[in-house]
Length: 411
Image (cartoon, rainbow, N blue to C red; front, side, top):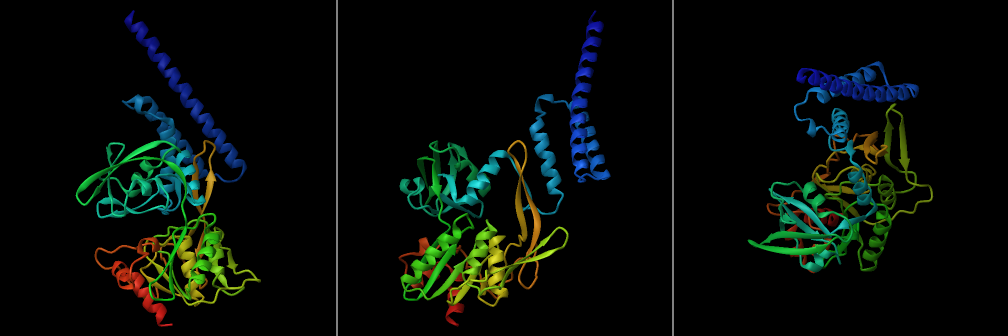
């Protein structure tokens, strides 16, 4: 009797496995058919899909921990593996539905969180600064606070992205942050809010007519913010500008085009876009452009990437500004978001960017005209943090800014 029941159970399991495999195979065949109709899949692609189905069958039939099998994780893992083989690490990437939404919020300039900007400090994640009027600022969090725990969970050993993710959440939700300051732990009970994070800040270097103008990102309205900041700085006596692009990881390329045009004559090449077929298209300054004729130096570092590199390369190659600091990151491909059916997305590099002199940015970065390094213990400081300091104190915090100022004064 037991043998008979066991045989029936085995036949039932085998039937279920066969049906599951057939369903997966039929789905893959349908996908292959649709892609073949659009002339995308090659013979090698179809063989790859068949091999994936074969591997999936082996796992579903024989893996010891069947409860650990998660179809969504398997699918996402396969997509990530495929994109990881493209040798475009740190650029082309896969985003879950939640990550895709956060990415859109980031480049819209609107985020839900507590209002802190973070940085790595050796093995710690620390507060770089706080957003004006944010919960973090109002609760008393300060630059230099080292994050220890979020909602009672230790963040030691986590990277800056993981910590930032834990600070984000739904609007109105509570979050408890523990931070170390001067060897003493401080606890902050906060509520997440929707924030508009400014892309631009500026400060007049004391006793001079030089404005330190920082552009932190290329969000949807950053060119408008930039224009307002330039006008405000000029109204307050600024006649020369240090454009600080350090740690600007990029964003909307259209915003970089508009800001470049603010300083370049009509018809000048801002950058060259090269597509998958090798066709090149020059992106130029509009015919009716009236540029701002002021002395300018651009400050960059390894954290300057993507659209920031387009702007720096454009101003450098056109002879409009000297570039000071360190070599930039080298992210020179245009990312397009390609949404997938479940809300996830692929951020896919679809074109390559070249400088006006047709030098590739990808993997090469922008070399500064004049190298300048921070001294030990220093880090890039946004203008907001330097406001109220003397010129000597300002430069004591930031040797790269001092070098950019010196270059600007040389004419």
